Length: 311
Ligand code: NAP
Image (cartoon, rainbow, N blue to C red; front, side):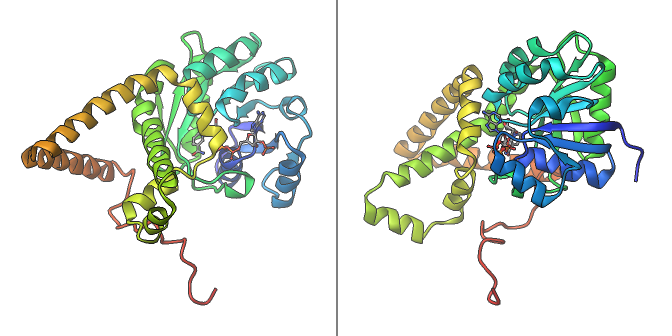
């Protein structure tokens, strides 16, 4: 096992991402001690049972005191309030980061609460599942995935490098970009796909009862894939759309124009236009597989969901 990078890592928020960081940091020996807290008694009690932390604290203030790395792992719109709560309890020299899926709003809401003697470097591990809560975390979540750091212009380069080393140790590839660029890129690669999934599954939910039961009964893998994405945590995704409004609306505008183009091609019977687009999109899938971000294996969306016969 490698030498620990931090003496004490404090996690504020112990859902999918917080618990996965704890599992991964423990497995890789990235910290001497990992402590944390969650908002509710229920989650804190469950984390004690699961045993993936060295200590479960009753409050954020208690969790961060004495920590040299603090990671805020709560829904985006709650980050500012957490930062306000912990600001005066941070130890001198502590690095503070977060994992929020939107960066511009987090930077502007968290940074004012971080004292001069500490270092704030915002971050986003681009890794997740549709599950949430402390039971859903696992050590391999970040393996081979990207983690994007968005340090402010005045952020300490040493703190950024130390955080890069931490995420690399957890198995991630690390990139640095500015928060606005992050929000634009993620709007199209992650936020709009979720919005489309929520929309299409919502449309089915509103169909007449008879049709709806048939859609569910005969659901092809395409629809099943959408339902997986649309089962993602409602509070987390509410916050993503509220806090990345401009970039999402910009990308949604482009998406709607392209959708109108497809509508026109279908109405006119323009098979060439359809085939050309579908060929281009197939190549994009190939590029993602070649970049190691997806596997070639066919996925019927039911590999782990159908219980085996002996169950
Ligand atoms: P999660 O599993 O739902 O866990 C959220 C945690 O935050 C829980 O411990 C919860 O406490 C706490 N929390 C919720 N609302 C809070 C509030 N208002 N104030 C203080 N604490 C609050 O969520 P997650 O998937 O780990 O997501 C956490 C962050 O990671 C989000 O910012 C999200 O954008 C980002 N992220 C998520 C994914 C993903 O795929 N899920 C991927 C990358 C980044 P209780 O359990 O006590 O309620």
